[in-house]
Length: 193
Image (cartoon, rainbow, N blue to C red):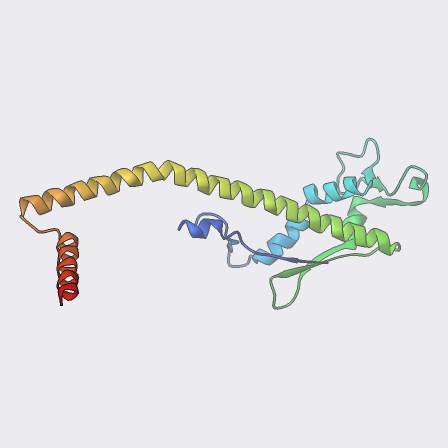
């Protein structure tokens, strides 16, 4: 399967794109696409995939995530289909498609249906997590806007008041009113002609 990696563009709409929503390079050696690949292979996504596909850690092995043993399928199949999470991660390959912002996700298994289900589920889990992250970022942007909007409105009102006071003190004519009056006069003269 493949996953397109796109940054959230909601924060760019409000001019705070340098704060949220971008996939930024943290160091000169880091690669944002590689980072997303590691997120797909992360413990929460792998555990969600294992649970959703009824691949469970054996009792007593919960603390040993990497070396824990998992069982695949229903209880009648568990005796002949055991896999460690370490082996599960070895079978799961997530890599960048060359020259693109796509990640290729593959899982090797003797059972092609299980392999397809693993790939589909881990991609779905990644997309759901990404959607939740984007929603929380959007919510944070919305909250920021609603907090800042009254301050900005007050600043604009104060600036307009100062401008009116300046014009009044310096006996300046309101150019937009004068322009509108001249346009109306010209229009009136044209109608008379």
